Each structure stands twice: as C-alpha cells, then as structure tokens.
Length: 112
Image 1 (spheres, rainbow, N blue to C red):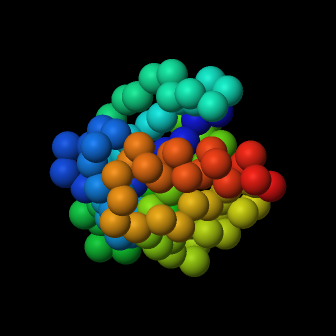
Image 2: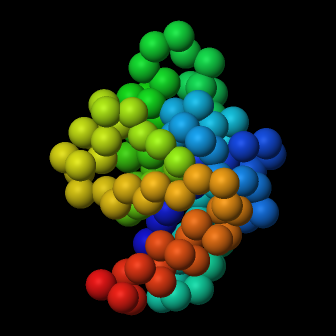
C-alpha cells in the first residue's frame, strides 16, 4: 500500500501534515507492508504555486505515483472528485505528523 501525505517543510515522517493537499510544500510517500512502514520518499510539490488547479495537478501526480490513499487537512472539490472516481481513500487529518497520520489511517482500517 502506498500513501501520499501532503506535508509542510522538507517532508518526511516527522513533518506536519499540510492544511491543503494541493498547496503543501512536499509529499511524503509512505510504502506500507502489512501494518509496518516499509519505505519513505519525499517529493517536492512543484504544482503548489499554480494560480489555479494546484489540487487537480497534485491529484493527477498522486495517481501517477500509484497511491492507495492520500492525507491532508483539506482537499479541494476537484481533487476529491478525482480521488473518488479512482477509489483512493481520503484521510482528513491536519496538524499531526505524517507518521501519526499514517498510523491513524492504518488503525482505522483494522477497526473497519
């Protein structure tokens, strides 16, 4: 499973989840094997400075990365629609670390 967490700053597991998916400075891509974090990669969000459509561009990028879930504080309506059409889980979770966002998401899957 691969989770893209929109993050502020330099990204990584200790970075804070960005308020807005399309405007986060970085994406922390987390590969999960079972219930464990297996690998982490940080990618710059070059789309965040777009005057319009940053969320759409970020959503399309995330799909190209093959994510199963995305996490941020907020998603714009177009990004929500794109992810919904593709069956990607949206995780609304602002102001925590990327690690905590991933752990909470994984815990919610066990509880479901």
